[in-house]
Amino acid sequence: MPETKLKPCPFCGSKDIRLSIKRSRYPYWYTAMYCYSCNCYGARTRITIEKDGFISKDEIEKSANAKQEAAIAWNRRSENETD
Ligand SMILES: [Zn+2]
Image (cartoon, rainbow, N blue to C red; front, side, top):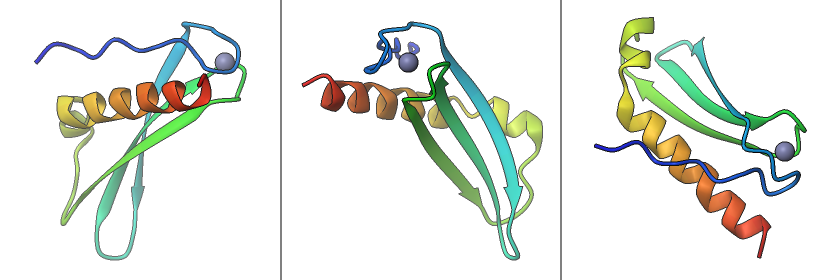
């Protein structure tokens, strides 16, 4: 699957969009968050993946699907904002 190309930030037009991956633990499941954000802090988007069990760091990094979804969500957002 080809990587989704990120659109520039809808607020400042920057193309320097950072991806951060955060893991968190809840009582019954584990989640990983894919978060795209811009340096201007005006725009941010998140995709959360949940799994009934432990998610290893490796597994998260290899989850191209979630990364792709986060990129699509980012692009959808920037379309809305620049309308
Ligand atoms: Zn920005």
